[in-house]
Length: 129
Length: 127
Length: 290
Image 1: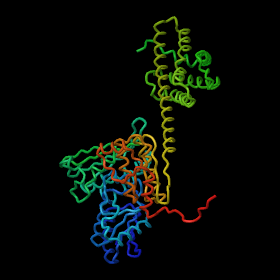
Image 2: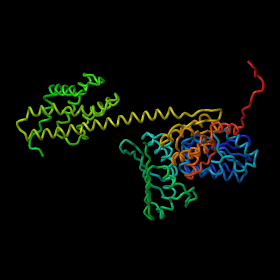
Image 3: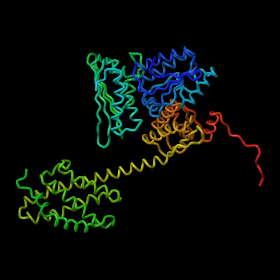
Image 4: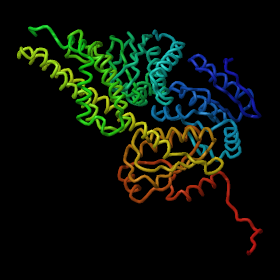
């Protein structure tokens, strides 16, 4: 069980990353989420990174992994709340979040998940990071 | 400071951030520098077997900057050029560590040879 | 190097009032007060301070390196004078003259004291000239620096004035770019846009470049990066106002904007509304002839 709390909202899982994560924590989160998607039959995973001041390639990989695993489990992953400085840095870093949809905040994120679940033909999503 | 464990990577980020603020960097420059530091710190821990970091505030005329020097006595990199290409990774990462850090820095240099360890120096300036 | 004892430190120490008087006369004669922006009292004060600092600095007899700490005070006085003159909009020449005009009374004093010994006189005059020349140049440098600081501050203010981000509608932002875009300006503008996207939760940002005369590779790259960053955050951009020439340049440079672009902001706005699922309708009744 990772130290980062995972909440359930309807058929969605919400994770809010507040702390500067070290590697073990990130791994634990990945495992935890994967387990919860199955056990809670979640259709959507929302990761709130509005408190993250830094997203490096390691965190990027974690997000991509989570997205890949949830896709296999037929769930949609949305990352919300990315800070402008982080976004600018990621573009400069050359990191692309494949398979990860993004939204400005939790509300819009939930709407995006709803839309993606209700319209599965839109498999790759209108917008990917 | 020592960079030996993944907890140290977090401490590196905090320390670099503090110095960047001290040097008067704006939020974007801070983020770019700290992210670059995070990348190299991770490399130092994961591939270099642990090492050290020196953080310095540097001055050149009117402008100020922060210089980071990472040293390790690990196995070293045989082919630096290949190591610096995007996507190249020996450890299952995204392969963006070195090349990414270079893109985020104003100055970047790397010295490494098999058996001789690795030294990466990077700097970011505030205009 | 010198066979004789230095006399300048002593001269400065012992003859300060007389020297000050002579120097003020020389300055007034050369028109230092003509512009009316400096009062005689202010000039006298500046001159007195410099003389005192010079006296202290000269005490060691080291005249070559004005960066040395013994000359800190003199440099500080000159920086102060330079800065205030620059703020008043005076010419750098006037500030340098402030220093150079000390030569005349100083040389007169030297001639008076050691005129009988031409070798020694020549040496002291040379030494004094060296020092005053360096200090005079220093004032010009400081002057330039102050002017540059003023200019860059004005540029900053201009920047902030000329690139506001506009909230066109709920969830739609517009950024009308005006004028030439240099690298640093573009970065600041783009950062502002992204911050505004967060604070107004705007899903669509219209970047209008009608007012941008040329788009080169660097500017285009900045645009592309901004669009990519916005997308990472969860917003979309539409670029509007692409003139035919700019379109040609972009194709010519082989750039892929990677974003929808429209000719006019109006078109972009219409598209944004559609994307957000909104429409503008004409209201049926309420049209009365007057």
